[in-house]
Image 1 (tube, helix red, strand yellow):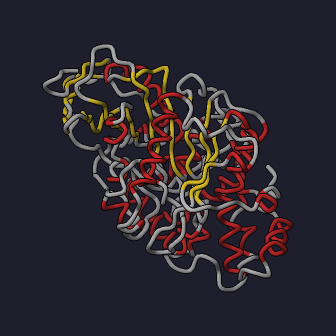
Image 2: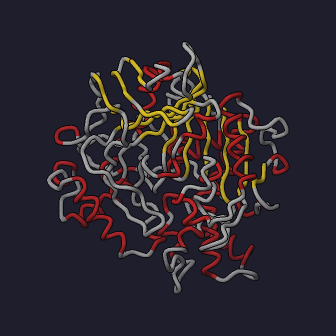
Length: 475
């Protein structure tokens, strides 16, 4: 890389980037051909080598099939080249540098999201000696809808191809392809924990950071029911051939409009990976709860995850809140006896609506995290995030850890839901732990691998989990 101008020559092309102080960034690098026309519902095809490419702006964003109100929105950039990635690296770079690499996959219920959100800026990682990569992948209809005439898990295969691009090219950006950590939050965390159970773990990456999510997966029968919802919204047959008659962004907007008419608790599991017998043979949470993965992991969650959805209106049904749980949370393996466990544990102190929220938090995030932590044991560092936002729910709700992990607490998109008083000291602690883990494999000298709740690292005010209730979940 030139010390005067950020230019990188690699097998993928000659990339002209931007320099901001001691950080060089290369944005919108295509790693796959645009997934349109004949490639729309196909597995990703590696991008052809480029000539000179001006990597100065984020690439087009993947079409979303779900929308949230401000401030929880994502930028939208038009165009067909959705499958691109971005690289932040220290500048100037010494010849032959082999820095650790962190590859980030965003969340968004497998239905929305992209890399252009300000909170995902990787400058702080590059500042601290890490080559940071963020990658777009297909979401919603395009990436996670099951069609009988198309391959499943297209979004996960996008992620895998992005990681293969990193293996082939990251050395030219100063990164070491043998020291790759992957991370994500929410659906991104579910993604990276899922990848940890595949044949690519230990080869395309060596470490994983899971923030609020361990992989779920539909059976083919469950996936077909979700496809029925999509097809009905589009007035098409539940096949890729039929749905492909609707332009991708238009299709996503029509499904998002249909989802807006549902109460929030009914939209959490419309899109998910599928147990396809190839990439996935069982649910990732079952795999991680039963046997260590060939990678080292950080696994954790926030104390009040599901309060996030309360921000958008009525989350827990006012009538029949407990009866709604089994139907709404089938992919999380919710059973009626589990509901009684929650009634017995919380019935004297919480309303039925509050029990519903507690149940959803545990089903989607807390219980799978505990199961994976126990299954990984000394292969895993565990944490609990407890710092409460000063606005909205005023609790440690879902996504609130992001600004701290990225050390981007001053990003406008983060302030809008965290408030203006997020402590920089907590960002220093969490981000510093992530950088040390990415660099050395150990987040803190006094942070022990998980063997009991005494090993949980608490980020924020003192807090603990209800282990008796969480242990009732079986996978």
